Image (cartoon, rainbow, N blue to C red; front, side, top):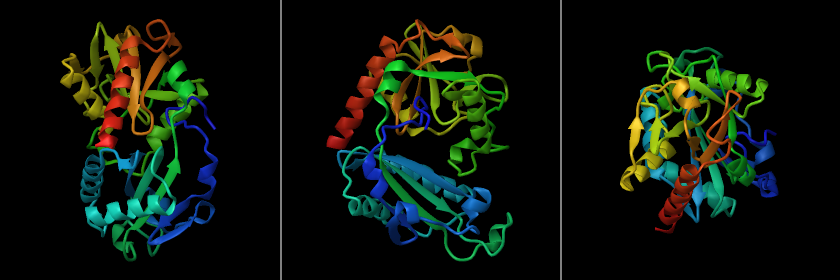
Length: 305
């Protein structure tokens, strides 16, 4: 398993015995299955959310549900459960596993089992497929200390007229292709540009740079609707720090003082090399460290409340 991936985590033997929710049943993880005719398997037709459990609290739950139901509505998929009922499914999964802290949850909903393997949603039989996988996951501390290396992919982030990344769809092949390019180049994560050549995001995380004390990130037109991204921007603005959501180039990225990525599992993770070039002095910078501590204090406080 990749050790420095933005999606990397500390192995935990408790995950071997977790129960997975699959359409109303709780089954051992090695017995969790969906049909080969399921829309998600056939076409990646579905939406998902990654949630984090800290001290018994599901962080930013309303934000995640907003994005999930917005995405389902955009693809004309009726989840079949209201927000309270769906939250109850997640909480029951946690309760069955005796989980109260340090947990990452993947909530996945597809259009359901199909009569035959084709694109047409009218061939779906019955209701959507709902799966909840809850696992003990913590970011690898050595990754936070060392920082990630990025490689700029030739695959671009797409606009909403081609493929809207803000839907959080199961269909992620272009992002996987970008990551494979990065891995083949010896990097941990792919940096991706938008259709106009400006920096957009990474393949699984949102991307930030720091220049002369200012925090820069993309406009958001061509990248994930990152919940952690927005929380970080809100925290910096609340503290009076300068923020730019703007178009910026690879040249401006190469000359940045610091860089980092954000995501649900990892929170804030430093980036120390891009395309073989060191970012700043090649070590996690003071701004990133301070902001990461501020964010951890925020989520701990949110959990406590």
